[in-house]
Amino acid sequence: MANFARANLPTLKKTASYYVLHITVAAAVAYGVTGDLLIALTLSLLEPTVQAVAFFLHEKAWERAGRPRQEGGNPVPVRP
Image: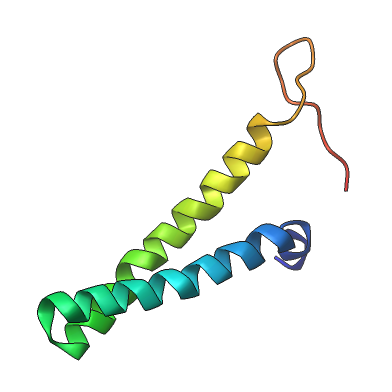
């Protein structure tokens, strides 16, 4: 797990920043719509958590798509 974190640190930091921003915006919107703080906090934690995972996977897919390809169509391995 530590190797995974080190290898993906910039993307993980960006994902964490996005997560905090998203929770803040989602809580404000949910509270504005519902007027209920508990519901707003529940919604603001659930939806951004799913989005953060999707965002991380999206970033990794774009990173992989940008790598040069070998003749067989496989991405060229990138060594850290």
